[in-house]
Length: 114
Image 1 (tube, helix red, strand yellow):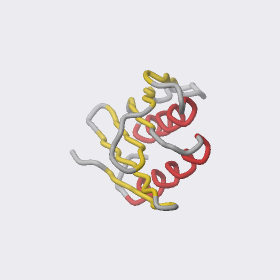
Image 2: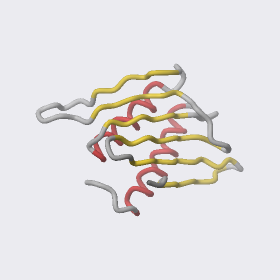
Image 3: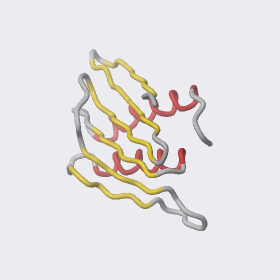
Image 4: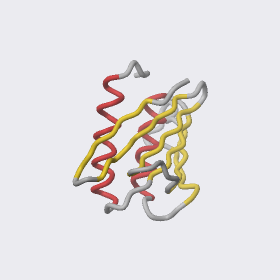
């Protein structure tokens, strides 16, 4: 069991994505600089016939949409429940775009499901 790591430097700030696939779940951290806990979202994979993912924000209140979307994306990608922590000093939409790019680039390079 090991992390899938990705990072991107922009304007002197390093953005990190760390994904830990487990046997029955996937855990991911999205953060700047040193690893921090941020808004935490949980998601279940979409079942047969469902069009919308099932997700909830468990902690935090700043990055509600971004944390849920990333959690749902990981749950769908791995077909497992996912737990995501999202922390950034940028506005939500800007941070989301950066973290999503890092995540998609790394997942494309790894031997991950789907």
